[in-house]
Each structure stands twice: as C-alpha cells, then as structure tokens.
Image 1 (tube, one colour):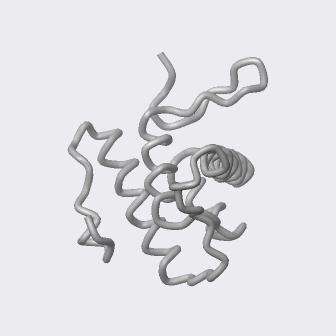
Image 2 (cartoon, rainbow, N blue to C red):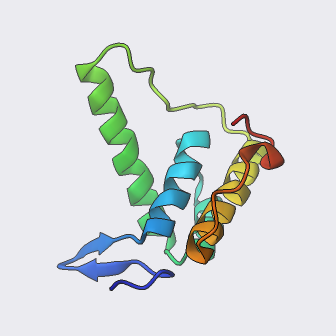
Length: 117
C-alpha cells in the first residue's frame, strides 16, 4: 500500500495517492495554471514537490487540449488572466480536499472558499 501523504516513484513514474489526485484535480478545476511560488506552497501542503505539481498540471492541460481537438464541444480551460486571489482560494480549497480525503471525511463545501458548487 502506498502512503497517503507522499507520492511514490515506481520506475521513475510517480504514483499519486487518492488524496493527492483529488487535491490536484480540485485545484485544476478552479485554475488551470499556477505559478511557481504557489505550486511550491501547494506541493508542500500535499506532500509533493513543485515539479511534480507542475508536471501534473501540464499533463492535465495537455489531456484536456487533446480531448478538445477530438470533440469541438469541449471548451478550453486555460485562462491567461492570472488572479492571485483566485489562485490562493483554489489552493486553500484543494488542500482542504486533500486533508478531508486523508481523514476519510466527505469533501468540503466549495462555497465556503468562495466557489460555486
């Protein structure tokens, strides 16, 4: 069994825990691109390094872009308007998702963090 708090490297490929995947997905759903300082803070909070967070987000953007090319009804998520306040809220919510998952609780209410459900 892989530890809940840290990603495990298997054959140079990182295997993320359920809690880490949920937190990364929650962050991506709110902001598709996060700058280095915020990635470092977020990564530390969920047991990853900045590069692991960066690569996960890049891979997710690539997958979504590829899907969008195959299905023109999917809107492109990438937003070039970077608002630090929105990113900070997204990180706070995503860390809460990570903590709730690790503790076995249901996911936190996004409205508490200023996001629609």
